[in-house]
Image (cartoon, rainbow, N blue to C red; front, side, top):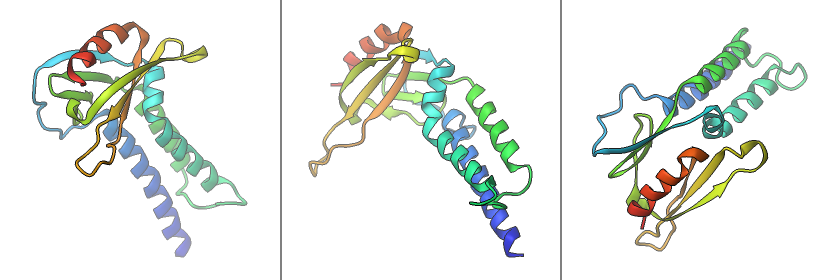
Length: 173
């Protein structure tokens, strides 16, 4: 009986991680976006992998450990590793795009991050196999207590860099 509970908990964790990743890509219950859409930048496969990389690595590490006979053994309901891998592939194949409005930037129909949260940005071109990718690092402002707010990274195709930089120069000050 106890083993079944651990399997249920382990498989629920896998399900939670997959749904957390899915919510980054697709929010069916999101409110209508406020503001005017200024620019939409579609992401390629590499950018989608960069968006999900931490959660995907955590998910795959957990599945690997949970299925190893000496370490985890029977932590998952049978079939969960295959479903986790299939779910990860499906999530990575979902089309993503950055939507820049006059108020902020969001992924697909997600909640936008307002421009007023950021004080500056910097562009870092990718190297080697990331050569067609540009990382725009948005630096956070200081709040009233003097703490720096969290920044945010945007992974955009190099072909869209000039348009996005022009837009950010206008809105991030």
